[in-house]
Length: 376
Ligand SMILES: *Cc1c(COP(=O)(O)O)cnc(C)c1O
Image (cartoon, rainbow, N blue to C red; front, side, top):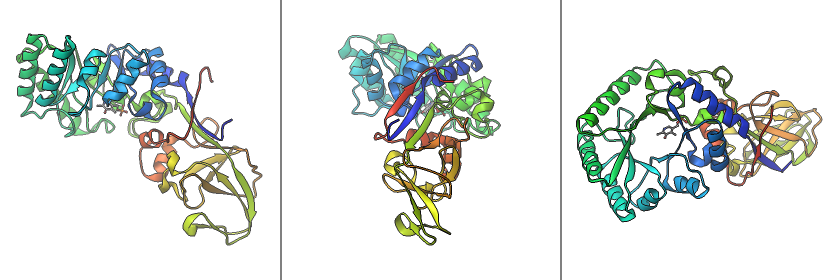
């Protein structure tokens, strides 16, 4: 074993995608692999997702898409968060579809397509109520008219029309029906402008798993690809037929007996109540262990559950293990699928007041990812 590692079960990723493919019926699956595959490693995750049946990959940034192409991944690819200084021409040459929310971006894509001598592939994005990317209802007619003109000129092909939900993890929330209605209207407006997209897409993981009316032609799950639930109202990973792919482990680096009244770690936010054993775990906030996990983060050591004792430091934290027998070199598991009683990323999210997405995607660059296939 390494001093520490995030172990990634690639079979779990493939099986999760197969499950999402099954629940999404006729819709194709665009596996979202942005942010280094939610911390799991972008390229191995992308390959495992394709092996599981993903027909598309989705990323936020241009560099992420170009890195997938440079690695030889040739499935359709959408990048959706472009800025004016991004290299649109490289995206066109690499056959990356780009999301367009505004006329300036369409202009940059058309210019890039002219330089590249081939059409740019666009997914026009409507803001149907999230209030984030996408053209507003007021700005949408001009955007689709400009796109229709560019399509007629042969500089772009409108591959998709799409949007994103605000409350998919609250499956009965009234904004969902309102956003579906707004999306229907946006599609009608596009159609009347002569825009004929090949695919329409709206659903993230939560919507893929619980809102079949939002599936359209392609679904865009991210967190569920990695085996985590998109939210407690949607169900647990087990209930959803998903398997968490990441296990974060470290070797206990030091163990020592200390007396009662020993202050532990910076600012002594924990004090021993009696003579006890302290175990030092070499992972800290620089590695993505939230500093908010001070005194609350769950950890399993040598198969038993504990909580972090005192302040989480940059590189390490301490656990009071009482009179249990723990030795340097024993395995500390911060989270995993939960099969062996170890905490899960959901347990961490609850303990520190965040979501499982943030727990896995912030695991730092210092933590090596190791990949397993064929595990149970
Ligand atoms: C990140 C993202 C997704 C995936 O969301 P999950 O909740 O992880 O399934 C889908 N679409 C867009 C636009 C995103 O930014």
